Image 1 (spheres, rainbow, N blue to C red):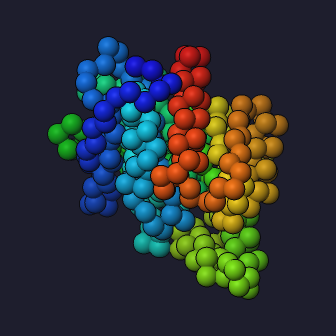
Image 2 (image 1 turned 180 degrees about the vertical axis):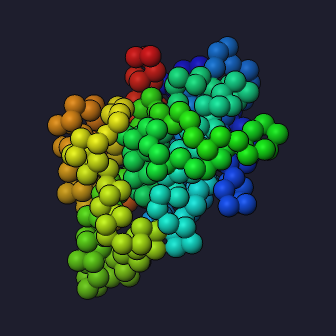
Image 3 (image 1 turned 180 degrees about the horizontal axis):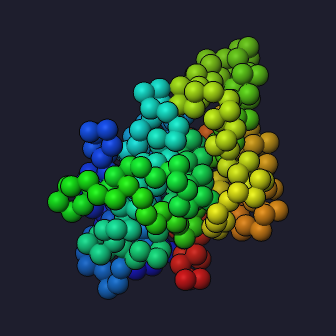
Length: 296
């Protein structure tokens, strides 16, 4: 199956993939219908919502768009603040990757061609896990077996590539950006919400700084630098360009391959609505995935 064009009908279903603290976590799986001639590439998708809101259904547009082009998409639920604290969400995202790889055979997935995607705070989580495969702090969430029994709490959570849509690559810098705009009449309510959600999940500024993707790369603590495709909306008032610029610069200096695509006039969160920018973004995601698969 090709990822260059949308030519397949899409099947959607929810399945439990992990269990933690007595709670099952669900994943929505988007897959092309029919029988593939060979195992397919997969993307584990991480929704946004300031580490506090949203669920596995948030990525419906690109989930369907990628599946229609021959990619299996596994969109995750995960623990969020304020009820759960960092690194709970990263642990669950890691579990999502491990689950897809462990069950690759019955899911029809090529275990060597699993990537990750995320938008906004989900972009932060996607990048954080992608650049730190095997990190002990990201283990602990038990993946479910085919019979629903909890199993391994650690394993291979590496990814072949990463896609980040307007990611909060540095939560600490974004927290201070939000604080700086709390008195801005045009953004005061949103700024207060972002600041509160950040504290609700990370608890304090030290944890935010420690979870900075830019910081991990700059400190040469990244265990991997998978190829990254990043969507940068011009009118993003949620993640300032300085945060994205810093991540892109750090990644390039560390030797990582990163491609940034600008979306003139687009706003933060655009992938959540059907639009010309969403269509353009999904097409670019397909192209990037196809390029990555051609290398493997």
